[in-house]
Length: 458
Ligand code: ARG
Image (cartoon, rainbow, N blue to C red; front, side, top):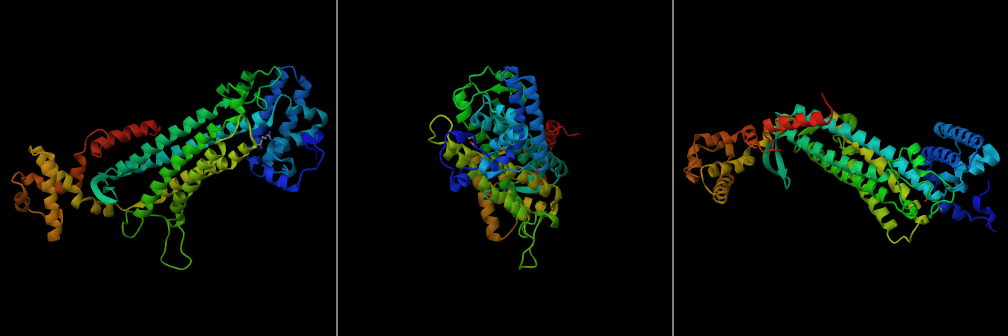
């Protein structure tokens, strides 16, 4: 098969060069979007009077034919044709003859590839956002079922204060909502049409780019042909959004891994989502969660990878930009898998409310013991010190806070009364935190209602 530049070259391309410069092995992922774009280009060429109606019809039918083969998986991509664009064009010419050679009029692979990528990103981001919504709904469902389950919050991975488990799930729901904003921002960056920018300077045919944008569903046009062909910030935005969401998933995974240990025993993971050991018969490992945590590495790497590729590129298009695709495909695939994976784990795990409840009391109540004195007029710093002395006393005696008698309490401050002993109930302590966004039951119920409304849940 002939290469488009064979008129200019006197030598056959080295085999190494073919192998080294090809991108079809990975950019065939863009094939369907490339066809979509070509169809819009044909219509734009026809509108500009560059193609007759008959020519345009032939090209459109030929493209549809190829599209069918690609969908069926029977299209034969060839390495010597370098990339997805030239593979499809060459096949079109093979099937249609001369008229096929008119497709690439007023177009360069430089505006072509950027257009394919933007179309691809827009479609893929919708899928990611949908899976993120399913994850958030699962978190809301879990929150609804766990308003009455107490556990400690942890700071520095040390027991901090009693909270309601619903509060924990709603915290992640908030964070995944903020991730959706980042994906939406990436969507908006991608929603800009490069086609019609040519190789770098625009094209010398009267293309109606607004018409092309309308056909392809782009909200805006790239306003400068150099920027349109040379810039990949819209891919950085995707990679960044994936990296942040991956970081989030990694932290949630880490919690669940810790919670599923024998030491914590806060959750049980179902066998179907775990794997065993090849040597230790007793093991049930949380590999899905570990891999979600581990895959954050490649999500960060992909972002860094492209940032480095872009740095120092002279205007406008350079072949280095071909390196943008593998990180992009990998991040989008990885983030979707990770979101789906964690949703499965959340759906399947069982919560051990008794174990959580047991851990929620004890020293987690000491802040409230201090605040009790504050409410009686003692400055917080002094109250903190008194409660600190009580803690030291308990540790020394090997006693639990709930075993304190009123006399013992009063030996630290005369201000402690009978009602201070009520503070040794984690649910009461949690429910004192009624501030907007706090863990009190009445507040959580309000937040839960808002969350359900926002997620469109009954
Ligand atoms: N495969 C190339 C890429 O991904 C397509 C554009 C090639 N353009 C060029 N002038 N060689 O960037």
